[in-house]
Length: 382
Image (cartoon, rainbow, N blue to C red; front, side, top):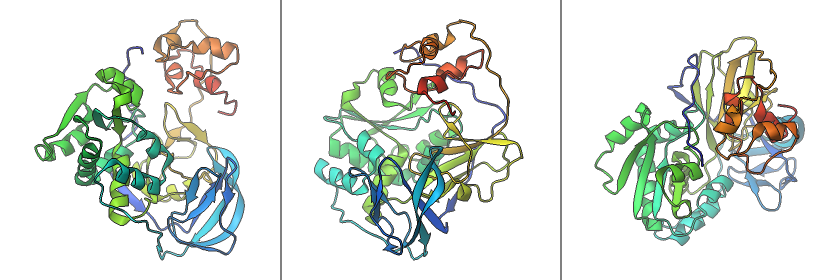
């Protein structure tokens, strides 16, 4: 892998310093995409954490208790129009719980992960022998503060869970990796200095892509096949499930940008709408809205976009008309690509590459403002 780089961050964006809970949504919308079918009928009562839709392999769960009122259209998921199960909140918080045994061995942890039934979380824990366990506090996308707020607000719980997971896997080393410029997380770690003598803190340079396991392990000289890398939100989900015996049903989402005066992190019910997320947010006219980041995000055109577990942020940005210019054949995109592919050649031949990791660096460095990432994704609508 090539040498990683530090990316410049826009100076006109203010980082959120406040978190707000948003649990009192009137409705949630379970997206029916990728061959998902409802498991409930109109008029049915549902409990929080009840299975309400499936594609045969994956289940979707209600984040509220209430009543199924309709199968509605005109909603969006990842900018695509879809149908959704509309559930009205009765605010009674009736819950579906599961049995939780004391976590003493790997089988106990795997049973808990199966109950949480979170696809991304389960993928991270698919490892064999673990020599090194890492709590990675890196977030590649600038200004997204979700993981920082998970850690700052729940440091003791997350560190206890990290210690527990390390014992379950019998890891020989437990590390916390943090940017050497990340004062918020470093301050939180100092507060717990000495309480966990088996956990080491590693300060690393602020290099793009160190959020990703492959790049982090390569940078640190670790065997990725014998390293388990987790995020604060992963450990919080495990802690939450152990304590409350049910699935987490909310999600931190960062709202930020150079065209809003109210940057904030919101803890919102899963399957709410971006419309709910925007409640109380001040922004200027002539804004564009970008979901999940300036490097790898995508524009959204409707506040009827459904917030799911993969929603990390909503950027409110000033509209800037940047016109693509002719390629200068400078080779900057080829030079910066961490996977050693040639973005310009792929664009010219209208082909995609399975090796592309959609990091956005080719577009970031292009002096002609060509959105190479759009072409590499095969996304003509971006």
